Length: 419
Image (cartoon, rainbow, N blue to C red; front, side, top):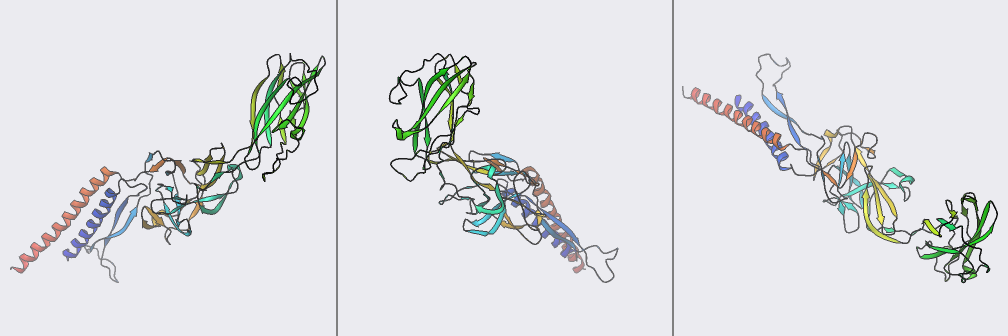
């Protein structure tokens, strides 16, 4: 009867109205993906098939399909906010301790929980690939995922083993008449100091004394004496001779490098001996100008505290420390599926794997068809509000038309019954 056909149309229109209303309600939901109602006609079939004169039995809702097209990126002031530009989902664990219960989302509103883990508003932990070391060049164990914990990190100290010192020694200086003695400033021409660090991050002072030596028509010698933390003989860690040619260029040692003796820390603190393997003066000169230090660099670091987090477009998470150091703490793990429309809808703007979605494909941002990651941004809902309002009008007319079918059928039935 036409009543049944019209009723199926009302149900279909009601579903369309509900889906459109849900889209409109989530127009400002980060990472939300709009849906659409998809319909199919209904025919009563028999062993002989559908007759050419069969009018049909109405309509049914075949699917409520989500549309995973890209939403616009909105930039924020929080660098823990993440957005994916392109394919892929953030991989989430139910909690930092329940890492095998996974879900997937495009909503990157992450923050730190009380234990320093990066989580979303529901407490789901962001999973990252485990770093193989402290630098990007060490790589990541792709396939080995773990929650990322941030604010418990400290900037580990690094012992100094290389010092680079580029100086100019004055060609006009005279040769000291007194034997070298670091306590007698008449026994050397110039000095300079640099702060270095032991394995526990404690600072020490490396002082270099420059003593002009013999000259020939082609070369001039300079003796360099190195002391750490004082001028006693126990603090001497090595000396060497630099030779400059007549143009003021350093020619000996050829690479400008001396190896110093180990320095034993007294009193003992538990730190390892300081071993300056490379004391490099490459680029130093001897010209007729006052002594100057043109460049000074050492590779040690004191202990530091966490000062910030940076995330690059490949999803590498860097921790920055007050000692000037940095450390990689993970690489955001992205996941995609052969059939995203087959994902199970879990709510809270997240999805789960299902039999229809296919197996998850893990990957890294910017590779293997995965999109890039934008820190300090969020992906907005992909709902076009104007289009949804138009669809709302169409769905309303659809509903009213089917209601009119019922009214008309009722009028006909009343006419027949009143004969």
